[in-house]
Image (cartoon, rainbow, N blue to C red; front, side, top):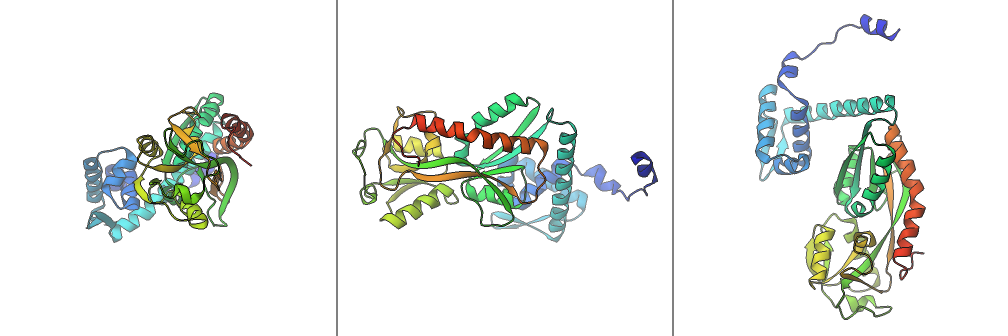
Length: 330
């Protein structure tokens, strides 16, 4: 029996001092700081204050008996001891994540946690899907990380979450990808813009107007720049903003035109403060994908959500077509 096998095992060497003086929370704080290279960014990710991050790192450093970071300008880099500890942290958290998955599987779909990391525009589409899924599985908790493409790809490379939703499949044979939902990109303007109501507007025409674009690292920004580069002159970029909501407000205020995901206009609908322009080459028909590292063993919860999301796509697509009949989604 398993219990007899456990009794026969030789006791392992336990680092008593570290166990008594080190907490998993400290290790989490250290891992985030080392990965991000910044106390401030670690504080933002973990929803803590910067002084709390600094204090916990100092306590951990005192327990280890060696400095874990050195300051390089405004950033921090791990020392040799810090690099050793970082490798150990990753192994510890991988083991704990696997334990959490196994326990969730033992509990079936009654309890557990689903960890998702998604690009920014997905936040307009995903909550409804999550709400429907959680209604069916009331004991499941959600951990949702929303960021731009570059940050999500960093998380994917470290396998920090169960599933990821991205706008382009990484050129990596070690990634499993599932086509998830359409993500049309459209040109938007304030309702009183002179081009509203015009048909078949040339790229050269809208390039005469100031444009607002997403920040560096955004997949939408890269796609739009390639589009303009292929079809005509690049527009004059008047402003760079880090969120779709900020861009919407700037466009309404008359600061410029923008290219946005159609999903970011869902709550306002066709009668909202933004108008869609009929521009050649638009909408750009992009696709969202659910991805995870190839060969990864998904928990029961993650597999159930993946199946549910893929089954829901046709109905969501048809609703989008009904809401925006003026657009060609083919």
